[in-house]
Length: 502
Picture 1: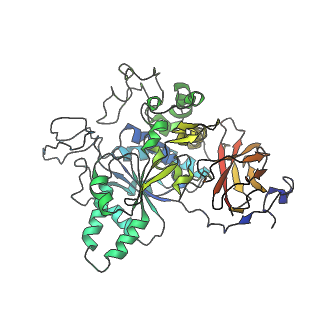
Picture 2 (picture 1 turned 45 degrees about the vertical axis):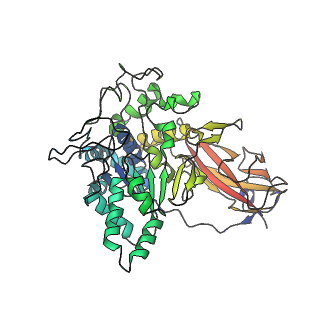
Picture 3 (picture 1 turned 120 degrees about the vertical axis):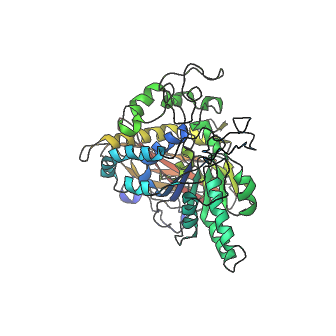
């Protein structure tokens, strides 16, 4: 069988061996998602990035929720002392660092100012009115409060029970309590009825909770024991790339720390339009309601172990990893989180409960494991892409602006024979007409073949891959085609080919 590759359209030499192709999947649908958030400063910055990528998602809701760090109180003076050891107070409080229930709407107002420009680059951007109509108040009275239905929990419940067959990604940027309340309400309505098993199986298969850490106790206290088949992903390992004080969490390569520095941040974010101007950074003298300035952004009193900060240095986007793998980068990180992407690579910890957590490391260029490299390896591409979308937001229709390369695998996933050499091909071009540099490489961490393969012609659209003689049947080899454009802000897109040894 001849390989379907770029050679067939005059871009390379003849194929070395045949690949047995699998069945192509359907065209990618936009992932369906709901954000729940306590709207701390890092949530705010993550939401700015999310809005600039909102053409990539089917956003069903943005819901205020509480956490161990932020809760509103019930307005009746009720005193509450959290049982969570992560709490920041030792005596009962009537509320704690609450950020309010209008901050999302305010940010959507800034999005409305640039919506026309964004839509000129992609008509898939949702309207500000649409997003505003889907902004709801969830369970916010106390940390972990899930005793009452709310507009936010009712929205999640309705989505879980509807007939849309797509997964519903429930992002927990704060606590999981509003999600837990929706699940509890479904249980209370259907448990003990003839419909219960069908509803339980449907919800368990449909919901995917993506939590940037468990910021209350409702996962361990309610979700895990009562909904053990429901997939839950703890992506808090992404703090090593995107969280507060990231230098103390993981070794972000020195040359990539430039993308978090004051010069890059001011030029590419703060000075670029209404959304960029809202972005929180170190030393800006700003904070969200309830957030202490001396913790998040005051240069006069940083932790002693923290490297010296400059005004305008990156502060945090601790919740960005909850949606980065939903972006269509070409890496096909969904629906299998072990494949890895901008949002990191996950490993399954338990089957009941169905819990996935951040892979602790990826192999670096020298073949040695580097902590949090599953996120940090993508920093330049992700930051340059973010900067370009901010430029979209200030570029009127009809004005030139950069776009990502278009990349397509021309070799489909398929089976290969051990000991043979196969050709993998891809198509890559710049829609703006510039040159594109390509590179094939093996994503060894994502595959199940335990060694490295030899790739010849890695910098061409068609490359030859030597499948080792001793490769065992069923092992997978993940090959990534990276294509980077030549614009002033170089943009990168990918294609992935998965070979399975026969």
